[in-house]
Image 1 (tube, rainbow, N blue to C red):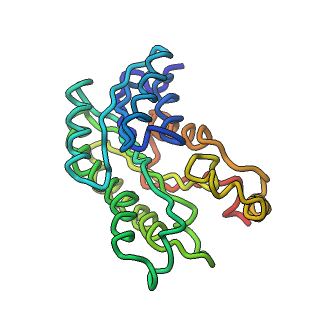
Image 2 (image 1 turned 30 degrees about the vertical axis):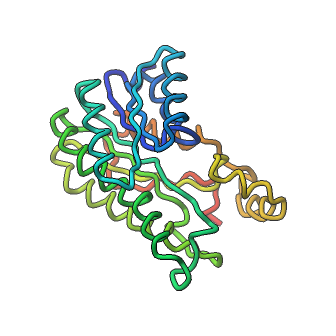
Length: 254
């Protein structure tokens, strides 16, 4: 079933992990994909994978922390495919070595993390929403984090604050643009087996401690988040907006 047939989807951070999984799944379901990533090689690899499977996609290098890049990728996508129906704000960074307590963090690191994890979504929505209006509506999917829902004894304040702000931004966009048939929802992933986590997963003690906190006893896979995003991108979720979807193996239920 082509659940996204006729739709055009912009996915940031689509060069690897959750973003690449979503790009491939969305394409399989009929969408044309605008692949955005700061890593040109990885982004072009995603496009090649989509085309090899019979899908259609373009790549545009995009540093989501820069408004000009976000404006340019929206423009390039609309030029290539004629419209924009879905914005999937997936790009993010997890710098546990640089992202520490607010009393100790280098404020340049704070700014760069918030530029990517929060302002990237602001910029793509700022430039993408007018195109979605022209298309008659659409779906915006933001990636939050369970880190935005609870405090932590090991602070990563810039990331957590960014994801927390993204929750209220999601709800504000949902209310503002409901009249334009634009929906906006946010997914909070738990621990997912992506390249961002791989260096931490090599620590056996850390790995055991994390798995002990997940009732299902496993890490999620990129496809677990991508499939949740697919539902939100499709018309199957037409009565959902301003909602938070937690996909974490039960971590927040404990």
